[in-house]
Length: 146
Image 1: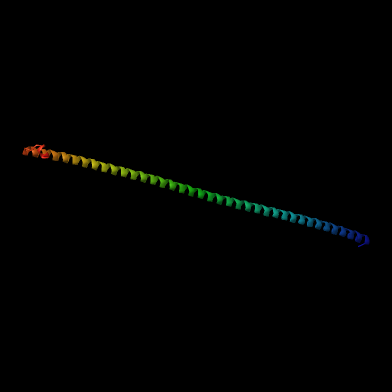
Image 2: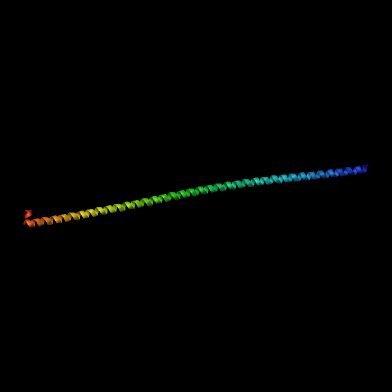
């Protein structure tokens, strides 16, 4: 091989090494750029996951609070309904008691009237019998007063 061929061969080798170095630099830059983008995407994904977690947590807390509020409301309604039922039952019992008392008073009055009527009937019958006996015996009502 001649000097000129060696020179051209060395020159070509130098250019090839330079091109290889340039390609390696570009590949390294591309890899660094891709790693940076991957890191950025990873951070975005982490942030998005955190946001989703916070949203789910907030929704769960809201649902729990809503369920608690609904349960308290149902308890209050049930309590109010029980109070109303108690008041209605109390009113019914009071009214029933008054009706029984009125019926008993009416019965007592009926017995009193019947007894008074019977006593008056016995008095009248007795007076009539006494008058008949006196008349039979020839006694007058005036002589019994003497």
